[in-house]
Image (cartoon, rainbow, N blue to C red):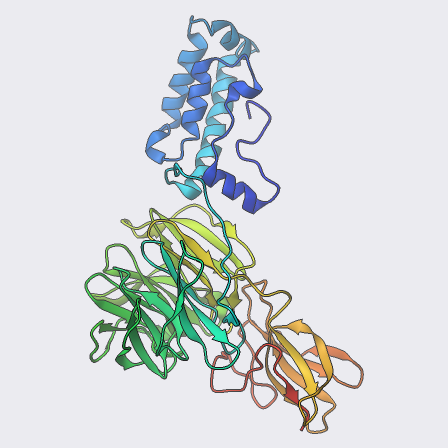
Length: 478
């Protein structure tokens, strides 16, 4: 407000957020050369990244500004000029105090020290003749090791099921872990020596350098796990269940959370331990997806604490951020891991992040030292509706590429009912009807919960036990 310019500028909300994280604002004196050094120092203190380095109250700042305006130092002339208008000192104090409060609110979004090194951004390619899992039946998921040196991600070859692939970030190649066929939703042990994952209806672990796979317990269709330093794993064993806990060496699982039927919760999923190893975050999804929340659980009790409303997987990023998706946009919000509460407002930090509304999961991960990894959304969609003859020859397409699930033809073959999901929002899918003779489509459902499995029945959730159409797979003309 003193200079008529923003402290942090950018062409988009995301670039402004990046500037807050990575840059220091230009000195006031660079824009207003007559600004006294003491005032320049006071404003710089207002914009400090660490809260403890900023003014602790508006009263402290007001006293500092009064001292500057009354100073008879060599900067007195410039100060007198700034305060020479009628009511000058009071006006200056008010304007700068408001500016300090606004700047404090802005920098509070990311209250952490600015790293001495530059932020590095890079893209990682899948291994030769493979692709990262991203279709309707292949869960896009990536996990960064706790020290930020490696990633593990699902890859799919030209033939065969999805497998886990480990890639050091300082190398050009990695290795596929044998015995991880059909693996989904990997997560690391705290020391980075092992990886947990779901496959064949079981929760399993494998050494990060390869070796025999260990089966811990049943998990029919896992929806995320987390591992603490005491050797305890909290995990979601199936799409419609609460969370359970089990020893990392295996054994009988015990309930870690309890579904709140009064809130119409139908699943708890995507747990993540906080640094204390006792508390963990997770998504408590409800039949009305708009009422879903991120909850805080503890290994000592099944009673939860609500954190905030959200529809996707939460992750804690030291030293104090809660990351979660809003559709294909990843946002961050200040989170006090000691007081166990959020503050401020969410700020976008990445866009076009792979978002699977089928399972309420966004493909991102963060290490304890600030390495963020995520997979990008694929073009306009990951599915196409394709007509094929009995010999496998493509004879036509229906509509544009998108996120299609569960196609079903009418008995006369003239209409097609299909579930369509919008990846760019956090809302759920609806059923649309294609008129194959007219080339038009009509939306059939408009309710808040997801609608699926056309046309025999409508349900509030869709995830498994039904036919889905992977990317570029055929809808056969029978």
